[in-house]
Length: 136
Length: 203
Image (cartoon, rainbow over all chains, first blue to last red; front, side):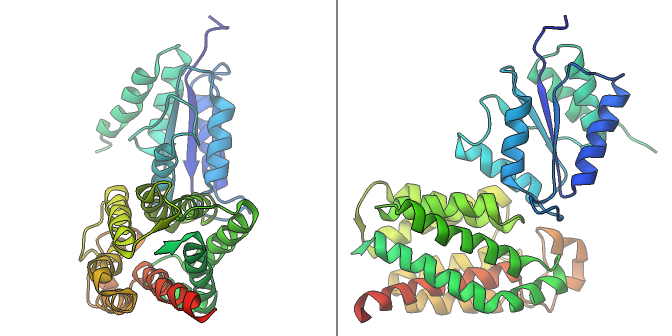
């Protein structure tokens, strides 16, 4: 079980702190989930608010175990940059996919699901399903 | 016919006008956006010029594909993937030809603009760069000067529009009365074509 390859998760936010904190939150709520490779790509390379294609590419490469990478984003340029990188063809690992999900809830669902050894389709479905959880 | 040098001059002219207008772009963006459009575009086009210098792409298509890639990776805002897609798609449409006609350029830019609309989901009238680019491409058949005025008029015509895409759309009716920064920088890009063409005859 421990040597089973897990789907990688990349969390892209306009803010480095948001991306890093959501990664920690998701891993924490997944009971440690140490086997799941999770990487944060937040803010610009200079540490400001924004989106960095370089940080996203590096994060995706770092969590790629060959069984797919789920990329979750916050909004605006984060979404557009990931889409543009996917269109490039060689900027993100094979099997990388933009997952349409709420950022925090989707990240938790994705990491918890990936920890079970689920495949990319199942991780994507779990993250997307987070949209259907109503709070009121 | 337009060769790789023409396309390099186009990028150089655009970088210079983005530098010149950076404060204005950021001022427009602070009214309805997050006040970074000028500096983001400056960073992007500075990186484009450095890459063109370093890699010296030999064909018009290669110049635009490289410029597009650099914009995607360096701008840091939504303008990066949007302008990056515009130039990259246009560059791919030009293929490996060492020289292209103005008609081929117009068709390639049309493909680029379609790519931008597909990526961002914006249509004409949404108060975005599309409102400058679509009329510019429509006018390209009449020459670069006509394209430039169409782009500038398109940018000015965004003033009374309600923003329907991006950060400005959160403002709703408060976005009315401001010129869209993306449409404004798009007009600078299109104006660069005319400058690039005059550079060829003057040198």
